[in-house]
Image 1 (cartoon, each protein chain N blue to C red):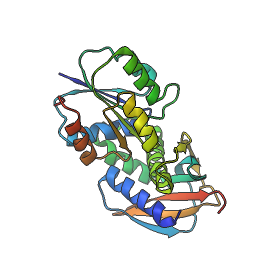
Image 2: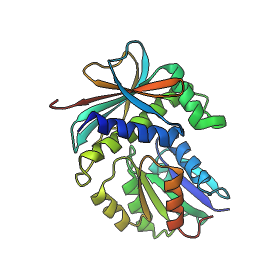
Image 3: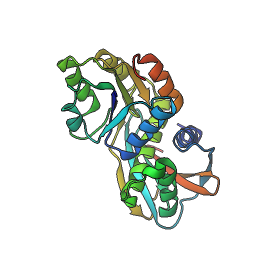
Image 4: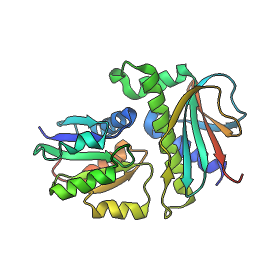
Length: 140
Length: 123
């Protein structure tokens, strides 16, 4: 499974959910504190996928998605958005490995702080904001 | 006014599903959202339900189990399953349980429009 497959899944999901054109670029592990959501993929391939954004960007993405209906609890909403995004990207990406083998994705875990290590990172950017997607595959 | 049930443990997913359905032309309905299948089950007998959109993977009760209970009750309103974790084999199983349409995430207004065309009697 290639990084290109991941980029395709990320861009498709971002553009469908956020109604903007995004570009994906490989980058080193971003430094600093982020909000992030992590999905473990058990089948048809094994690995982990993380979607991360700064608090500012996460809030902007939530405002874009929810508009006037943005809930009051911003941190919970921001993390929920990242988790839903990670879940959708993980499913899209894993499905590229096989359409026939059942997909097994873990429920998302959510946290904030420095990003996990040993992941390959991709920056997904549109206009003046960007977020990050990390991928770690077993056996790679 | 017909009711459209949206069942998903993610607030983001519920919002996005509602937005896609609205953009696709479904605007003269009452959207009723549930963050769990357990809560949604108690409403399956409501005669005013015109459509239910349900996520597959949820804690406590899955969308597939909710679909089984929908079938066991003899409910007839259309059910659409939307999930990131569905493949062709499971799609066949869900259609066999009574789902009218199985959509892979990301949902979109275009996909919602296609789905609404297949689900007749909702407007």
